[in-house]
Length: 376
Image: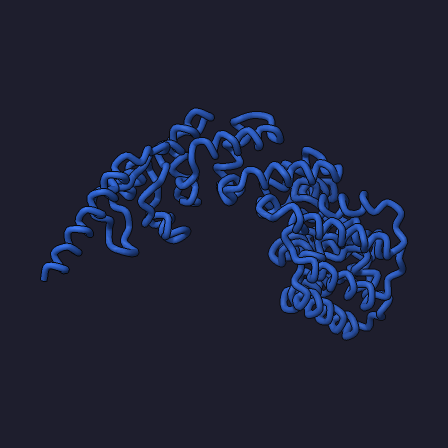
């Protein structure tokens, strides 16, 4: 009994000492948590104080729960500091609420971190309002990574490759995960691309890698194994010469490297079988892909529908092989355009199909030149 009393006394002393130390921890950020001396909420429950704060700021809690539910259980957050920071950069309350709703983890960033990251971004973007505009569209691009040093190292590395400010801008807004990668990971991809160029007899391997990154902004967040497998598949399946391969990969073919290897093989096989059924040769298949390799993004079902639609309108398969970019348009747009041209008695065999491969504005202008305006 005496031993038990001494043990209780010791534990009580330790508890008081621990509580005393915690009471003087300095808080450098705005915080929604209850005082640390209070009993913490049950495991996995949401922080009610945080929910009240976020709700008063116009945050969509349903969306926040769906996107990053764990944030709402945190005891230490910086939503007020974040709001003040964004407001100082020109964001209104609605924009701030929308940013937090779509990327709740933003409220875990300290004010020091935000200031440092903002400076890095402003080295690429022209104004605060431009950065706010990007955050309002894609908050993940700014808040996803918490490693500012890694961001700086990646910016320095990409600039050393000759990546233009315009492409850095596009990378940050379109493929922000590029800057979450370690520099070593990005360097591995660049070295792979440069090696591919050299293996194909290319002379300027640095320009080759830079061109592919510019054409395919997602390339640096893909695995080197995928890219290597896709390049080898295209080389062997199409029996490309070195010159053909270099030209393809530095144009629309750069985007094909983004496909999963299984999707690339499946879509290639579907296209091959469909063209064979239509009486086309292997040379026709190769020509079609060299003319517009993005046809390999089209699924078998969608490919059949679009080819059927075009050929029913009197277009020959060899015309499509010459201008496969027409397959980029949705089936509904193709049907509408074919209907508009049919009303005017348009002859595809005589005039070709280039009219189908044009912007909405140019197509409508062409229709007006061809005859009386139709219901578009």
